[in-house]
Image (cartoon, one colour):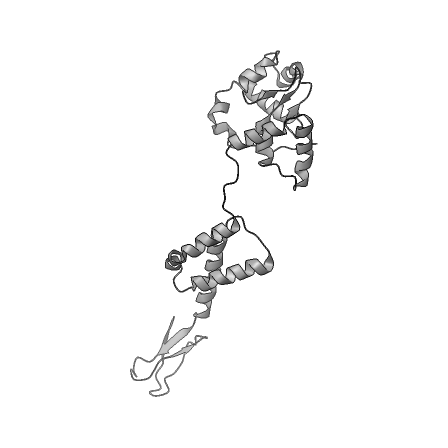
Length: 232
């Protein structure tokens, strides 16, 4: 049993809202009946009408009138390019689930059309490369420092680059990754200075001192009065 992704926002899209009830059902019938490459071979509109519960769809050209993105391959075969783009985004030969889709499209001579539709859909990734993203961060390091006071942002950035180089890992969004990196660095910094400073109200000339463990009673060595503390 094959499964398909569904756009939960489809009910808010105008092109879908203006369809009549039977046409909306036909849309879901088409994306359920096509193969994983979006191809409908031997389209049987009588069966579609029977299963939907209407006799409205009798001619293949009605499909093209209702859904202009559908491509007619021959008298009984149709292709849904937007189905491929929605289900897989960009087809890549390095991805095993995509291989059968690519093969089917190439066998039918549709792969070139898929690439055109994909380009028109504006889904081509425009995200800069790793080096470009890291260069952008380094150029604006002073701005990052303003947002993360108390953290050595430049030092952390150098540590980040060393970690990326040694681990060989790559990230989709390096700004987001560096932001989380700095947050963790800031949290560790706060943890390091989570200490308590003691002072004596009665002996102002007694120097204060720092202790990592707060004590309810700590007495002044000079006047033997209870000292107060505050977290720093």
